[in-house]
Length: 238
Image 1 (cartoon, rainbow, N blue to C red):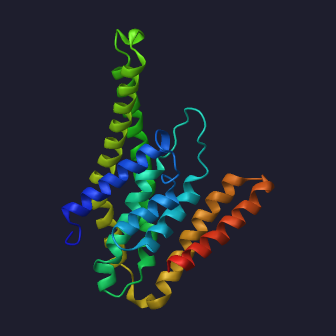
Image 2 (cartoon, rainbow, N blue to C red):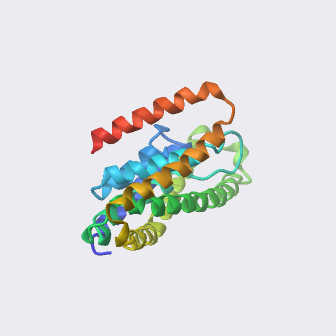
Image 3 (tube, one colour):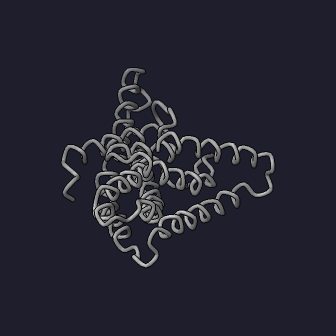
């Protein structure tokens, strides 16, 4: 991809490492949340609004997965960052050159982010199994605090490397997929193509999140407040 330089790719990998570590290790500042990570990914390639929209959709889709215990759930941070970055790349690529609205890339970016989130989940499982073997040395019971702290920092660093590899390996395929989808928009629909795609995408994620909320009526006002805040942020970013 002509606008994806090696430096930009490395920066995206570093950002992927940061959001991966934030999810469970340090500093847990919530930048691994899809709506934040997606915005970061889009901003890396000059399109924070596209990244924000893809991250917001993934936030709704992935919010129904419980974060409790050892339940296997999608890894949101690197996935949303990759989806947002792919949206940003597509916005500056063939789709924009052809005059197509960037909203046409949204469903493809969300689909790619969903798939990457599950890839990230299995990479986390492999990483944790390897970490358990790494820390279960025969003399582990005799380790002092300093050695345990060093091993803990190394485990965090390895988690960051894992997140960076997920983004690095899947960024280009995701961006090509999103660009291909954007360039395939039917010209006959004209200006209606973007709002139609956006409406279908929002209906899908809305259905997912309302299914997750179920009958917990005390949570609905929070959903409404979050939607209003999202519209306000979209207006500010635009």
